[in-house]
Image 1 (spheres, rainbow, N blue to C red):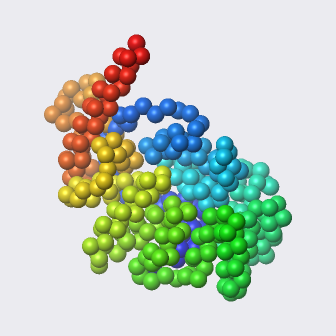
Image 2 (image 1 turned 30 degrees about the vertical axis):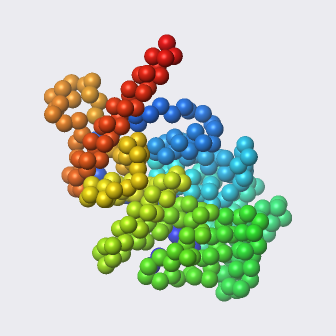
Image 3 (image 1 turned 45 degrees about the vertical axis):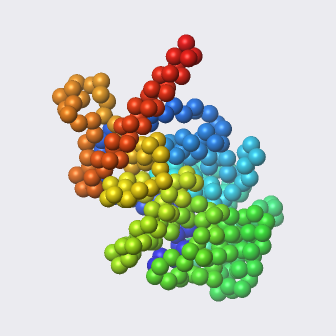
Length: 322
């Protein structure tokens, strides 16, 4: 099983893995989302696959904004989702444009240095963060010491950072003692991390997914953790496709009609424009289906109903405004 610390590093350094491709067909969100800078509105937009909304959410976490506390891991998570949905090429490039003394950039460079076996440089950056009052510095010192074999002090520093609100410290606090986990995820270790760093729900989902051939009964675990990732705005395209196919196989999920439509949007399905000549020529079907996907006729029928309901509600709202 993949080590959890390399999972953190992979998430930071290269972003989300390339997803399996499906043939594209068309889709518009049936709901109107107000484009504002409000955190909750941005999260709603992000859950519909708006990469720019994820980028703005990352800005909330970089240095703190409107009551949101600075959070290194949340910043990295949002940047990875921004990459997933096309707003940036990769998080490292975005971070490299931050000021040299920015805490997020320093923490990123410290962790990258440690990962590249440049512990001395990583430690220097960690110490500078501590001097600036950034508690992530303690977690990074711990990570550097872990790489040199001083696990006891590494755990102490990660715990110190976690107690002062560092999500990175929280993650390392649980990961350091378990550098190599067993063949199956140990939820007692990873779930506490995911509660603070929700992108770890993807880690859990993907680890269970990797072992479905040997343990097909764990498909409910894959669904559970993909849904938790979605709840926290961290569902990637592959997760959305998997959930739709899971439903297409006759499994039920606690999703509203609008949720199903949103998953189709995240999965990169697009709704056919019914006003075009092309549609008139193929009016017997509104949806095309990916060649290699499991059939999802029932999900599509639900989505059609949700779309009509949303359009009717919007028309009624506009009529009242007039």
